[in-house]
Image (cartoon, rainbow, N blue to C red; front, top):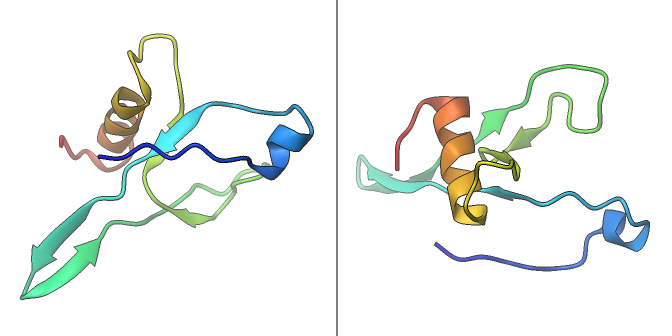
Length: 80
């Protein structure tokens, strides 16, 4: 796993939230595959988007890797 830290447009406006995603790569039928999800439809910024499983850092998370693993378990039921 690798962590990336970069400036997002929201950081320029002081609207930051800490979060992380998991890029799950696995072989199947001699091909490399990745897991994407479609976010639920709701009145919000990420409504209906296609994305990697992930989400925002919560109090119980020890670090961003823990956040990505927890969110992946919640969203697709996969324990990594």
